Amino acid sequence: MQTLKLKIENKIAHLSLNRPEKANALNEIAWKELEDVFQELSENNGVRVIILSGGESNHFCAGIDLQMLFSISQSELKCDGRRREQIRKFILQLQAPVNAIENCAKPVIAMVHGGCIGAGLDIISASDMRYCTNDAYFTIKEIDMGMVADLGTLQRLPKIIPEGVAREMAYTGRKVFGPEAERCHLVNMTFENAEMMHDHVMKTAESIAQKSPLSIRGTKNIMVYSRDHNVPDGLAYMASWNAGMLLSNDLQEAFMAKMEGRLPDFED
View: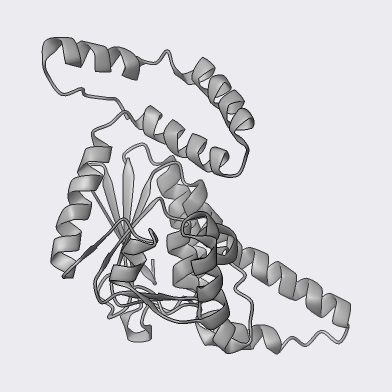
C-alpha cells in the first residue's frame, strides 16, 4: 500500500495512516486503500482487533487532500444535472471507506495524536473506541471551508457525545482538545504522551484478542444495530442472532476452560 502501513501480530492488526509529508491528508489513493484494507481485515480470520493510528505523522489526519476537492470542481461536464450526479457519486465513494470501518466485523480502536481534522473525525466516529493524547485536538473543519461535513460525522458524532456539543463543534469548527474530548465522551481516555496511550491501547487490544472471536463479532454487530433501532427491535434482532450463534464451540470451550482453571483457547 502507498498510503497505509499494516502489521499483524498476535491476532492484532496495527494499521497506520502513512502520508507524514501531508499530515496524513487523504488523497484518492488513500481512500481506496482504506476501504480495501478494512474489507480485507474484516474477512481475515487471523485478525481479532484493529488498532488505527496516525503513525509517524505529527497529526492523526489532516482531513481530505484539498487537491481532491479541487478536482471535482473542474468537471468538464456541461450539463448541470450530470455534474451534480457526478458530485453525488463522488461523495458516496468517499463515504464508503468510513462505512467500511463501522461495518468491519472486528473492533477498531483509534489512537489519536495531534490534529484529527475533518475526515479524520469521520474516521474515528466510525471506530469502536477512541483514545488520545492530552494535546490532541478534534475539529469539524468543513464549516470553515464553506462546506457541510458529508462523510458521517454529523450522523455518528451526536450518538457519541451530547448533541449540543456536537452542534457547537459543527457550527463553529472550534478545536476540542484531549481533556475536553474525554469529558464529553468523544474519547474513552486521554494520556500525557503517545507512549502511555500505546501501552494502554495494546493491553485493551490484547484483552479483546483473547475473547471468543464469534462473540466479539456478534457483539459489535448487535451494538451497531441497536444504536440505530428502538429497544424492542434490538431485542428481537438479538434473539434471532443468538438463536443462530449461541450454541458454538466457543461456548463449550469457555465452560471447559473455567472448569479446568485455564484460559480459553478459541479457534479463529
